[in-house]
Length: 350
Image (cartoon, rainbow, N blue to C red):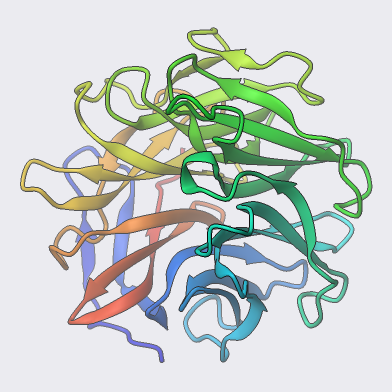
């Protein structure tokens, strides 16, 4: 089903550089959540998402205006296949990582990946890359990957398994030298003692460095942070290391929840950060920030769905669609339809 609302350009708050276009608003999948976009080398868009406890894929050859029927990517008989992420590698390999979440108290939480060598038409057998505990307090969560300039692939995930006797959580990382066919053992990548670093999204900046957006509760509530990583992760970036910093400038109040960050890098090097931010009226809204090429100074907040719904806008992502053009994807309800909604936003030329 595709739903497009009447055309209306939405100017965001004064001084904000992003302009959101309601004419581009489209429903990717009714009942979908946790949606992420990627583009194949020949230009076709792919959307991966979770629905009904499974992971799915849809295609668009119309730049996201219409979408194909959903194709099943992953399922998990003992629970839910969740949190799909899609990475297009330079040799044409597609890497889809996801999270197995058991409900039977027997099977372990796991980070799993599948590869496609033909643009997502067929997929190789699932690889279980990491197993955590059988209980959610010792689980692993939210994998995401990026390819470095030297060809190595880095996959990061949130990990509670090492902390059986506390509520701590770290971000662990794996490295592949062969486009995801095999992987080195996981290492601790980010860790704040007593904290809960989580939901990592790695991206390569314009200068070739690897940055990761993630949740950090170092100030109180979970808020977006950025860090610079150096695979193969010989030393974790801990606590208040200068290689990690709060993402948003000026800083949010320390008790303001702003979770589930997502990061995109534009062709001109600028960076875009999204998160699900709790507002004074009690609504959790998709909020988008613009940053520089170093992944710092994210500001000029805009909320593309704020005027359209009071429903929560969760598990969002942002995608660099074209020069100066981004697409946000949100799990929300518009006009009584709950599902995976997308909208385009444009930045002015620098």
